Length: 267
Image (cartoon, rainbow, N blue to C red; front, side, top):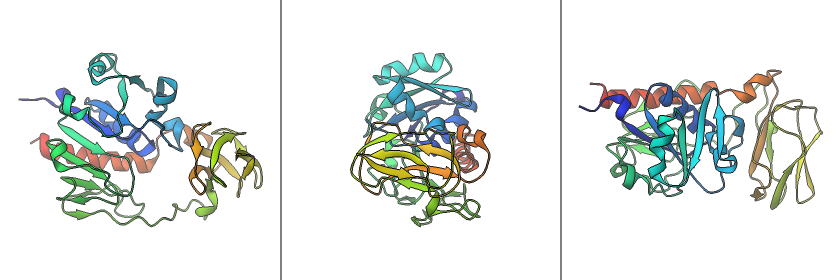
């Protein structure tokens, strides 16, 4: 009989919510592999394993991740107690690795090709998926009473398009690209800002803070962006350490994923 420690889990996506899932599953003893796109756009990149795509390796709350070039390199990274990250936008590696579980954590707000046939157990996060049709289970990602709940039939709540409110700030705490072009940051994650401070620029067009606070997230510098794209966020709370630790939202979602796995494999 397969033990939980022998099980391989693929997590599609390496952003902050996906990282919370991978981090928790890693600590539970599973072999986790993350697949990513060639140019990850994670905003909370200090707590995102996808940063390994740019830097070759990264660490989030004591767990390391290393970029690999092929699925065959994953085993050595697992032996090192780390999480392998593979650039594999269409997740073709599932055909070689044959995971027991596949988790779609891309948060694309729609299904970009995930199927219940991709693994014996497929779990998807958030809107755009319906349990029993696109995946075996769906985990709710919308803040509120249902956050982290495991959905066994039907869809997650639809995307509201409205950022979560923090101390009364919602849309005004989000930084967006003012134009098409290459993003260049002047400040970094963890820096304190006042309203109207210059955070960075896109092709010379400034990006300024709309509120006082701490820069909680910024996409990787040098990325080509499109006008209106979310490129950062500001936290009005004076808690700098929150910029470098996994959020309560990510861990709640990870708990829902873990429940789904144990419902199937721990009986």
